[in-house]
Length: 116
Image (cartoon, rainbow, N blue to C red; front, side):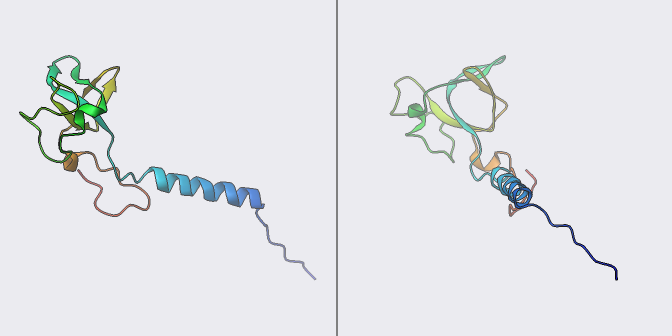
């Protein structure tokens, strides 16, 4: 008689594999794009916009343009949320002020189109 054997996975292998899949699913489907509070009046052609304290953006809307609107948080700063930018030190560039145009980071388990 031939004995049929099946290979069983160790519980630690199953747990680690499951945790990895869960971590990938959670991190690849971000609902909020990366954002920085910047001074709209500080644009520099080399560096981009100067990143300021987030209190300067509290009074401005995160979905509409804030041109001409001074925030209540910091005097003299035209603070606005700047999405999906490249940040270097205290400067941010190559982003957008329009939250709806921020990069869609669709991934495993995300709904919606993956385009931008």
